[in-house]
Length: 119
Ligand code: AMP
Image (cartoon, rainbow, N blue to C red; front, side, top):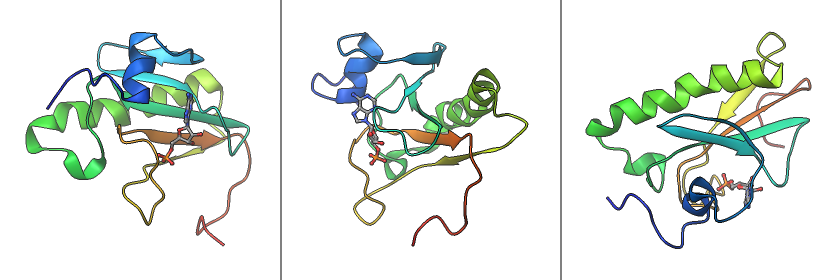
């Protein structure tokens, strides 16, 4: 697994080569505002290390998988939606319409949401 993929959009955000509104980062993850928000609060949580999709996670990636989930609560608190609630979702592959192939959790909130999340 390459750690810093030259042409990966989100690796470039991690490296600061493309501007993003970063709301939280630590040594494992970066969280930044989605450029096309679908809700009043919409932040992407990504691993610093390049992993293309959930399906590419390996057993030895257990710590980074956990770091992404742990960051969700921290980001929700920063956004002020920890109490009101939020949703964390990962699109993986074509049917889910994954468009950027660097794992990202969409943390969305700030409004009442419906379920199921599709028409
Ligand atoms: P997905 O369709 O799950 O792969 O989600 C990719 C997300 O990345 C979409 O919600 C896009 O709006 C978002 N996105 C694409 N380019 C950027 C960017 N430069 N900065 C922030 N978000 C982006």
